[in-house]
Image (cartoon, rainbow, N blue to C red; front, top):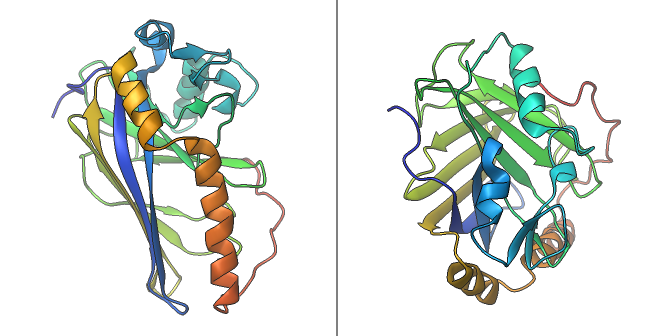
Length: 258
């Protein structure tokens, strides 16, 4: 497959988490995501008066929420990270999938940068993960510098503390679906013995990034960012009450990408 045949859009999505081990547990929540071409964020935001870049609005995209987290050029940051792995897009596109800030507040459990070369081949996916402690880590998923195949399982060693009920060990298995008319992502965490510890899935349907669709999404999931943050803490309390083993947060690993 070459390139992405979708353009800037909004995805109405459902996120599920399933923990098969003791205590077994499952929860899900609704959300919505924006997909931007990284070199055309301003053009994308101009599609509706309800979405803005780096200023307050119903929905907003803030550069400092991503990449180096200091407001620097995101495309330059992506190219620099890829260069560390000998990956050169040759001027190809980078698409960013991310939750927007809602009425100024934002929290992104995961954002994805789909990195394509000038011929439209997928060369890497940067999975930018945030925890509720204000920390972030970037997993650089690639095929040793060669073109990747959509949906092929890709593994990365866990390097970042997310849940207090898992230590910082094990391996992730990523499954990416090309973000076109449907959105799909699967992430599974396995322990050192190969047992599944948690399975996370994201599934969504494409909507045009218009004022009408933004209003529909906001009405369907009001105060989304606040609800996602609250849900993470509430589900953690319920897991703790069920006897899940608590792990203290370790010192963040450096560098904060792997």
